Image (cartoon, rainbow, N blue to C red):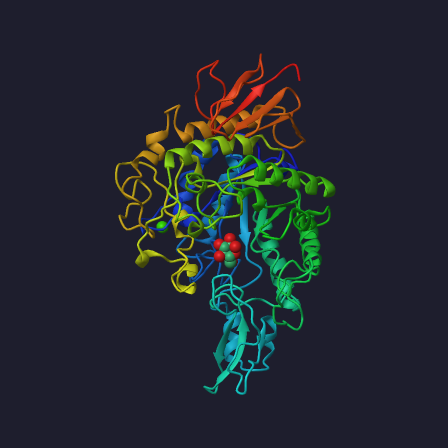
Length: 548
Ligand code: GLC
Ligand code: CA
């Protein structure tokens, strides 16, 4: 067990595990994962070898968007536990050498946050409305939304309220669902409230925050219609605006006022790596998710492009890159990679449904992908269940889907529930040790017994044991983690990069085996292959090459 605070820059090379709390382990038998469940499986996370866990929102919430609609960021939803249990979890995780990162949701609140309720019942012109974005509608009677913006989940970004006298009144802005009204970051109460939230959790030992839609908070003052033809960088009326950076400079000062300093990771789906690294300049956030890498198909050219752009951009500001293959908002990568790979960005289930899947190919590529990812310089994120090789659940019946994306898109997009299905721990049938209840919040497939932790533990060929080995090796190898890398010449369909000392990672995306450098010792291979046969297709290796 490592002591938690042996290195102030730990986040430059950590392996961080996203715990999708609702689906990790259910401690009290109501079918929903919770803090008690997570506390009972810290040993599992420690055995996996990760350095930190990131916990999705666990705050009081009506769960209109799985907890990303928060009533109070300084408390715990009873469905997940209590504030005391959260404090105990943080301490216990630290005893295991695991750091703890929470989610902060600054762009919007729940419609049930008292601030918003006051704003609605206070009527037009009441001071509380200034904490959100209320506007009168267009049209003769204000019956049309104030502008033409389209919500992330489909439909208008505006919903009209009924005024206290019963008449149809103003409209409020919500870039996501109507249950998630956007905050006005020009209001001092908003800034002060989030500073309090950060301190509240930092005071309780939390090591960092993942910032939800970090590029959204600030909007252009007059909330203009979106124009056709796009915008110059930084000029879009509701994302990636310059004024965001002052907010994050303030947050950085708060994080730096702690010993050891706390860290941030931004969720910012911005247009390019150059725009992304503006969030991780030295006096701003520490890291940001690298979605270009996540969204790249399993093809050498786009992957190499994503890696090169990431490294160059991060180097220009001195920040550590991050790498991630899956999260709770995208289709699981086993299922993405199980399809024919084509150039272009695709991340939701809907982008793939028309292409036939071969899960054995998906698993094989996923093994190679993690070998590649863990060898790249910087920090890596894992999404719960990927260490078991879980695929996307593609056949959830319509009536169990809860993601607002499904309803708001007019039931045309399947949404993100398929990557959020509860984890199988043991046994032959649902709930596979996830819960004492057979009714889990999303149903688990009947053929998941082979993915269960207990079924894989101790089997050297399993995905789980493979992840454990790879993470252990990454931690112990002096070339891996933070630092730099150099591409080496490779045949078409192959990428290879070297790191000092004596390390080479080779990934073969093609169908043909390739010859490996003579004298190289294989440290790790994504699949077993006969020595002398060459590195097979969809396979990656770590090599010890002393003569580099
Ligand atoms: C982020 C979250 C996503 C959520 C959205 C709105 O993208 O990752 O799950 O729906 O923000 O908060
Ligand atoms: Ca529970």
